[in-house]
Length: 258
Image 1: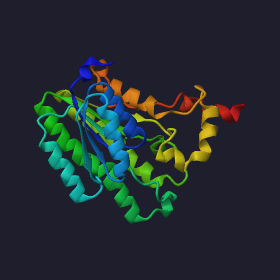
Image 2: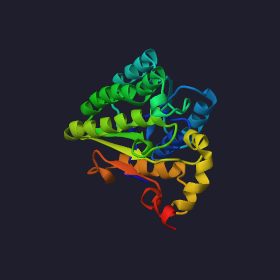
Image 3: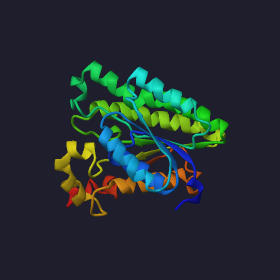
Image 4: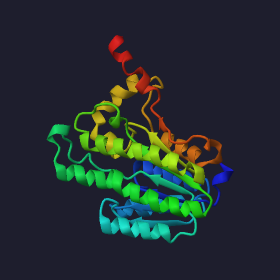
């Protein structure tokens, strides 16, 4: 338990499925009140609320697609109405639904992916940081992908957009640090039970065999790291991309040497 998180308020963008849901429930277990954004399944959203409320925290849902201007405005309006905001988690993403190589990518799909993965988060960071400044600071965490650093076939739209998002995280980290706002990225690769892992399910067994830790990443591995980054225990970590992969990145070439 991190006592510093008790009674804080967090906005989790994309917080009702997979990694986002795990982050929402993990923060709730620390006594964090939640505003959870989602844009598809009402059933999953309501299940997430029930799970989080078991910890005695307040939970509010906002149904919105951050890649759509009107929906994004609703989120911005909610943010600027807050008296305080301590934590912002940016987990929403798109782009896997039309896998293509970079030179074959369609401009419309790339633009809509950038809207969700970069431009929407940019607007949310701007409004959230304004509220955080007024209340003495806060924490912003963006969920990133190794596909921005290493080639994954068919992943071009996600990779390009997340590379831009990672740069946004680093720049805002420097610009907001003096305001006691800590900005970092968490990069996790394929995580069991998520949309991404289902899209590349045939790789999971191979990755587990190569990974020195002997297994794939689970959602709770990511949410535990996020909770720590939100706590006072990590305040001097600023502008970093923390890769949680059980050692896979370091050992992946070993497979070709054996």
